[in-house]
Image 1: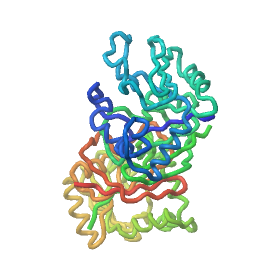
Image 2: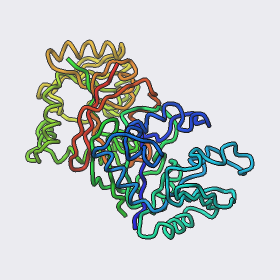
Image 3: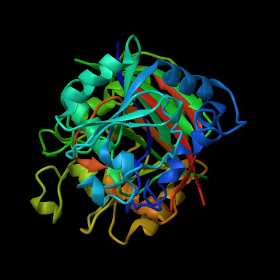
Image 4: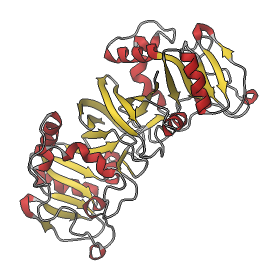
Amino acid sequence: MAVFIDISMSLDGYVAGPNQTLEEPLGQGGEQLHDWAFRLEAWRKPHGLEGGETGPDGDLMQANIARTGAVIMGRRMFSGGSGPWADDPNSDAWWGDNPPFHVPVFVLTHHEREPVEKEGGTTFHFVTDGIESALEQARAAAGDKDVAVAGGAQVAQQYLRAGLVDEMTVHLAPILLGGGASLFGDLGTDLRLKLTNVLEAPLATHLSYEVER
Amino acid sequence: MAVFIDISMSLDGYVAGPNQTLEEPLGQGGEQLHDWAFRLEAWRKPHGLEGGETGPDGDLMQANIARTGAVIMGRRMFSGGSGPWADDPNSDAWWGDNPPFHVPVFVLTHHEREPVEKEGGTTFHFVTDGIESALEQARAAAGDKDVAVAGGAQVAQQYLRAGLVDEMTVHLAPILLGGGASLFGDLGTDLRLKLTNVLEAPLATHLSYEVER
């Protein structure tokens, strides 16, 4: 059972642009990071949308969806907010009644909250005792499947720094964002990566790495 | 006649590591950026070394060498120094009597200096009146061939910001440097790139882009 990061990054290293707001959760220009995905059936279907293209990049996304038994994300990725839930204008998150995850999602937060069960198999669990606890719970929920660390950047860095990530797929978009959330930040040089696969596709280059330890 | 950037970058966006010194001109860990190149005959030959491997990445490097009629670089890439030449302990640069360029090289500097002719076709010209002047001189020297902007990061950014670059090849090494010279810095979002080629090879993924204007 593996732990993997699957994330879209600009050529200058950002997974969200500058000035993230409720109206523009991915920051200025950040939506473009996902242009490669929006056109794919593999993305549209879990989002309740019809149509879309198929192809090798669709297959890659479909394979990563199929292997995912649980998801871990940060509070900011969940709602864009921080602090007590009662004060969070987006405490119900971005995804409406039927979120695209369809598996248990573990949200890292400093503020306790009862689980929220949504339609389609997504239940949000709120974890206040740290990344290792979240991973333990996610592993238990995932069964034989893998655990996806969805983001954002700070959460990805925390898991990478702790040596808890086995694989990473970076969808490299041919854009510059000029600022925002840096995927690797000052993570430093301790991380050893081995490139295992490259897929060239419209609007992104899909790079798969094994994290060596 | 095109202007192109050909540069090796870490996955976290650096073209040199932190703490560049005369002993470690590429900064901590920065040498690893070029591991993919050191093993290639196409790299070894212009550096006066025998042997080395051939293959698609060697062909790519060879093609970029063959198309290059002149090179532009920054003062720091040339010697690691700054300020008056008389005070620069490395004013003769890193490459000895027979540098690997074998074409005219235009060095951007604030300090005037007579040209330095080396063996093997490399002459260093020192340009004190700006990037456009350097490009004009490089174009004239290159004849029918192309002009390579070799680096460092700040020089690459200046040419990109001025809209003077046609193509870019980024050799993406599967390493993190955690700091140092960021290739794109805060260049921002005005740059539009179109991915034209991807080559997967040992120790680097070679990404070619057209700069759209």
